[in-house]
Length: 226
Image 1 (tube, rainbow, N blue to C red):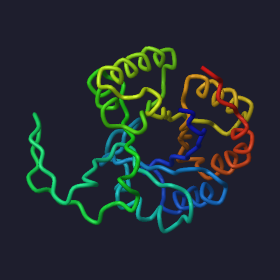
Image 2 (cartoon, rainbow, N blue to C red):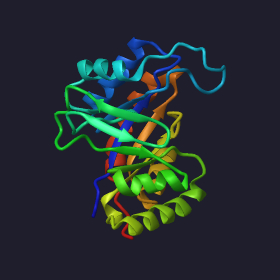
Image 3 (cartoon, helix red, strand yellow):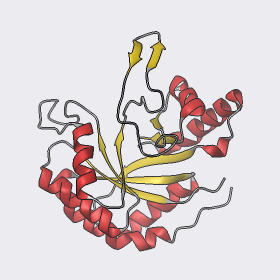
Image 4 (cartoon, helix red, strand yellow):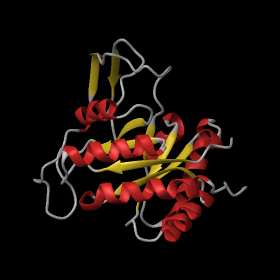
């Protein structure tokens, strides 16, 4: 299955302002990006600890929808009760009894399920349930090992390996377009067709505008045949 190469922007919901967020969403929407993202952390992460201002992820998606017209929106790391009128679940760590989540999504049967995973147990969840596997980024030398584990998990559950798109998040400082193209091309060679650029909150609008300028070149990258 040959998946299309798509690009998204992710502006953190922490250490920023709603004006900056809305500016980035509109740049992405008008500039031709495929999707925009926030995250669902309830406390800030990274240097400085957990007590910095942060926007609640689900509410922020409503603001995303209001500020854009065509781009897809998403929240990294979010739960789903999308298909059943009432959901029951008896798990090891929590239980649900007649849980309700309305209104249901417009997309049918449901929006694509993205699961971030690098451990053996979570990769098995990806193999069973995910439409997209998301790798948070970092050591790319570790990717081949993870892909092999995911493919083995797909074989184990009888899932077609190519049915699952591969996604990755990575930062760009806005300086070298050549460096951006090289990095994106390398990721594409590794099979990552969903690429999400994470923006530095301090320069989010500036970098987003440069990303729009680079987008036509990124679109020309071709998938390397396996």
